Image (cartoon, rainbow, N blue to C red):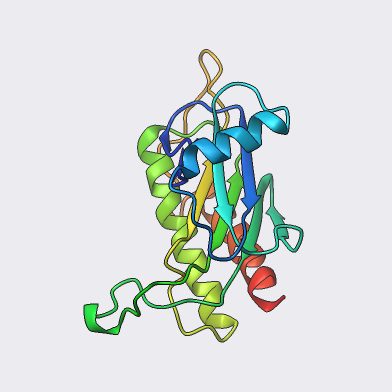
Length: 184
């Protein structure tokens, strides 16, 4: 998996993904440990990825495209542009979160995993603009992309950009799921 999540972020083999709902105004200063506790309580074992959001996680949107699955929760109360001028960023920043979890049925190399994060982000922004949200996302968006561990002798996909076979499928699945979540 590759993830920008607070727990299990980076590139590594992971066994589970948790998208935890926390209260608005979340104040814990140990979110990684808190997510690990929630995962243990839920019965998760081994290393995993923990995302969090104040959005209602029961109101998720899912989409698929030829073997690729995407699940999105979207809290769009606070949104903006990634490269907003410093003076336009409100203080304190109130979180809004778009969490994206996607899974591909093929093995991706490390560079392709990183490429997939860019593909997911492009598809997210496209969907937000198409649903009338004049923004690139929220201040606390997170992504997790799972791919299979390669079997001995199996081809590992080198690319996951939006014009590669698996990147195009990933983009379409994420685009559809973000559109549905943003419209909800």
